[in-house]
Length: 95
Image (tube, rainbow, N blue to C red; front, side):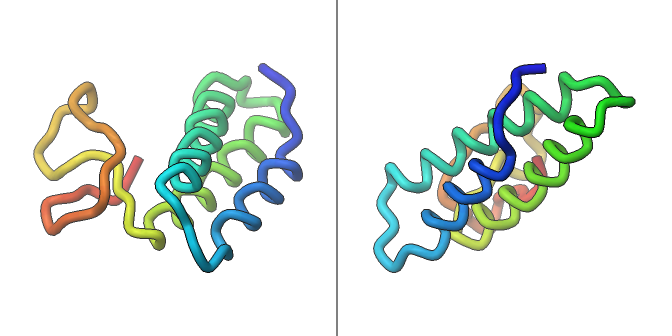
């Protein structure tokens, strides 16, 4: 598994998420962090504590991104069709 400091990622998430003036670039940075954590979570060994930490961090990051009005995929889409977008009534909130 690619070693990355989960604490450093949380610092990035916190600094972006609590900023008063978020830009699209800020949102894309959070999405990039979530993608990295998702890869670590899904690609990690089940007996490696870092895998569990990556999954927990990913889930928290997803909640922040969703609170900021961004969603992954739309209802009734196949997984290969899903991508990040500003949330609408047809959005799916789960990764």
